[in-house]
Amino acid sequence: MPETNLITTTFSRLDLAFAEFITQRCHLNAKQKVTFKTLIARLSFEQSQGHSCLRINEKDQQLILASGLALSINSSSTEKKPLQPLIIQANCLYTHRYWTYETQLALQLKELLTINYQITNLDAALTHYFPTPADIQTIDWQREAAKMALTQAFAIVTGGPGTGKTTTVVKILALLQQLSSQPLHIALAAPTGKAAMRLQESIGQSKQSLNCEEAVKQLIPEEVTTLHRLLGSKPPPSPYFKHNVDNPLPYDVIVIDEASMVDLALMSKLVDALKQNARLILLGDKDQLASVESGAVLADLTSTLKSHTIELLKSHRFGGIIKALALAVNQQQGVKAWELLKTGEEIISLLENNIINYITERQQPFLTLVLQQADFRDIYSAFNKFQVLCSNRNGNNGVHEINYLVEKKLGLSGHWYNGKPIMITENNVATQLYNGDIGLCLRDKTQQGKLMVYFLSADNSIKKILPSRLPRHETVFAMTIHKSQGSEFEEVLIALPDSLNPVLTKELIYTGITRAKKTVKIAAKKEIFIRSVAQKVVRYGGLIAKIKGSNV
Image (cartoon, rainbow, N blue to C red; front, side, top):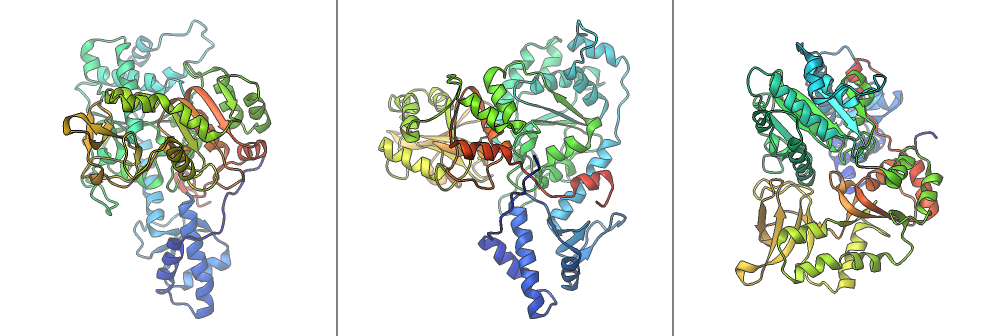
C-alpha cells in the first residue's frame, strides 16, 4: 500500500503570525505577498507536523528568491552559515534554523563515520561474552552489534521490545573497558526521565549477569540521565545548551536509549557536543513513532547507514499474541490485527464496555493505596501498572476528555487533590523536572497532610515539590501515545477516536501496543482501526540526501 501523506492545511495562529512577520520584511508587491505569505505559513505548518522543510515548485522558488529573504544552495556550496532567514535546497524550502540543524548533523555524522578502530584478538574477546552458536549457520546479531560498536565510532542497535538491546550494550561497555588501556568515561542517557529510569533498571539487572571481573562491572555506570540534563539545559526560552562544539561533553562513550524520540535539533546538538574521538551508540526501535518535533532521525539513519546499523530480531521476553498483534500492525495488516483482537484472548482484546467505567475500576487499587497513605514507591508502582493511551489530545476519546470524565466519575474535584497524577510538559532547570516526568500529588505525612507532588527519580530517590512550584503539567490518568514512548506498563488501554485523522498511523498504534508487558485492550471502531493501520507516517527532509552527499 502506498505511503499516505498526512498533511492538512489548517494553519495555527503561530503559523500565521510567523508568516506575517516574514512577509512584512520581503521585497514583493502586494499581489506577490499574498502567495508568499501562504508559502511561509505552509512552511511553518509543515515543521509543526514533523517535516524539516516544504517541497516547492520552480515558480514558487523564483518567488521566494525574489523576496530578498532567501538563498538558494546547491550540493557543492561550501557556505555553512548563510545570513538569510530562508534557504532553498533541492526543491525544498527551509527556515535557516532547520536547514542548519540538518546540514550540521549530516556533516557531523560524516566525520564520525570515518573513525574506525583496530582491535587485536577481537574475536576472542567477543566469544567471551557471546559464545559461538551451536549451529554455525546461525548469526548471533547481538555479537555482530558488539563487533560493530567496538570497531566504529558510531553505531546504531535497533530492535523491537525484548530483543536484547540493553543486554548487548552492557556487554559492549564491558568489552570497551576491558580493551581500553585506561578506564573510559561513559555516559548513559535517554530523552525522558521515564525512559532514563527504565534504562537504569535494565542496566543494573544486566550487569549482574555479566561474565567478567567485578572491577570491570564497577567501570560500567548505572546512573542514567536525560539528554537535556546531559547537555546542560539553560533556562528557557534559550534553545542552547552548556555543552556544544566549544565546550564538548567530557565522555569517551555516550549511549542514548529510545533514540527514535530524539528530534533533528536535539540530535544535531548532541553530535555537535561530542569530544574528539568519542563513541556514540544509539539504541531504539526504528518502527516506533518518530519524535514529536521535526525529523525522523533514527529511521533516516537506519535506512541510510546500513554498515553502522544492526537490527536485533529475536525477542527474548516480548512474544506470544502481543508480539503477533504488534507485527501485524507494523506490517500494515489491519484486518489480521483486528481478527487477533476478536479472538477473545484475555491478553489482547477489544474493549466493548463503557470506557470510563473500565478505567475507574482499573484505578481502584492505586486509589486505595493513596487513601491508606501507603509507601510512595508502592503507590507509584500501582499507578504505573495500568495506563490509558490516546491517539489525540482533544476530541472524542482524547486525553482531555478522558481525564475530565475519569475525575468526574471518581468524584475528584479541585485543581489539586490527594492522588492526582500529573505529567510535566516542559523542561525546567530550576526544579530539575523534565518533559515526561510523572508525579503524584499526595498528603505529606511529615507536614500535617499538606499536599505535595512526589517524583521518583532515575536513581530511585524521591523528590517532593509544592504544587505551586511545578512547571507546566497536565493530569495523566490518560496520556497520548507520543508521551508514552520510553515507558512500559503491565496493561495498556489504547483509545482511538470515532473518526479518522492524520495522527492515526500504524507507527502510533504499534508504539502503543509495544508499551504493554502483559495485556493490551483497544477501544476503537473496526473501520477506524483498520484505516489507521493502513496509514504510514511520511516526513519530508533532506538529511538522507545530505549524508549521501547528493542534492536530491
